[in-house]
Image (cartoon, rainbow, N blue to C red; front, side, top):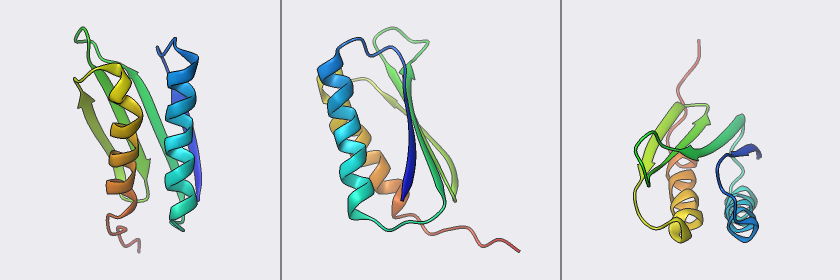
Length: 91
């Protein structure tokens, strides 16, 4: 499973590394095929973050409003949800 990860606005290197570890953990546990992308960026609403996951079933966008320290766990949870979605049939 190949996942492109884009992290914007996370200045704390330890937090960014924790996000990378969360994504690698999910990648190592699933054999999902296709191209995947995870994008994390500050929301236009102060204090919130937007998390986007793109996979074979399309884009899945979520807003995150808890403390930034909980961001790695939130991203891991959202990515797991998206990986487990059924793939859209292509004809």
